Amino acid sequence: MDVIVSCICAFVVVSLILLKIYTKISMGWCNDEVDMSGKTVIITGGNAGIGKETARGLAKKNAKVILACRNMAKARVAAEDIIKTTGNNSVFVKHCDLAALATVRSFCNEILNTENRLDVLILNAGMVPSRGKHMTQDSLELQFSSNHLGHFLMTNLLLQLLKKSAPSRIVVVSSYLHHYGNVDFENLSFEKYTPDPLFTYCKSKLANILFVKELTRRLQNTQVTANALHPGLVKTDINKDCPWYTRRVLQPIAFRFAKTAEEGAQTSIFLSTSNKVQNVSGKYFVDCKEANYSPKADDVELCKKMWSVSKTMTSFKCSV
View 1: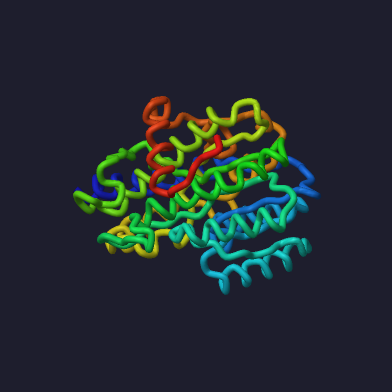
View 2: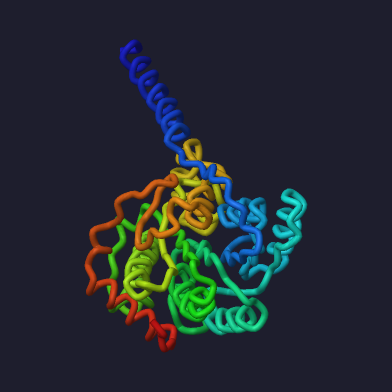
């Protein structure tokens, strides 16, 4: 009996080691030598985790980087660190709370009044709230507003500047979990029931993919591209408000195989800079390679409906 138990334990340990090795070997890395001098990049949620390392990677390539963040104190510290480690002084912070649509509008107005170009818009910010019904001041569900609606509004408000700066790019950080997402258009703000935060996260990440597909259709012949990505399982604090079983049981196990924030930022940097994807749009990438997205995103009517509902929820009259 002891021999059997020992063999099982050894098998599990070896399997975990092989999984760790496979994760490292299959990891994509952006090695493209691209000079971003003279180009302007906006990134949401650039004060920590994947966003901060994406900003650092682009600053190393000489881009002007604008961090659009809710927590300005944290953003200033992040900007100072990026400037110190890259030697690029063109790293700036501006206030933008994606869960408060008025601040999204204010941020975009400031950008339109101060910037004469926008080459890359990286929609990186994301969050997973604790259990319960969390609403914004706009009477929208917090996670859906932060992960999708705020980005939808920002993109549309900045679209003319992106077109003016073309060729330009929109990069949307989604997640593999979008494959498990379903959209109940009658319950987007928890009108009927309050689901588990993880299910809501999957829904918001599916909304990201549907947004990219419809945006691509609307941007044909504009030289503005839009692509989505899964950064991989990354050691960040996005799960800090998750249910206890996620933080105390699943997360410690998963994080043994997780990427660092720098590793998780590589696909965002790749889609923002690489000449290999200069004319690619409407695709989904993992580890700097094109990957399969949910078949739901091929439903043109579903994509159109998500766009229409998002437009109504943000009270925006779209120009595309």
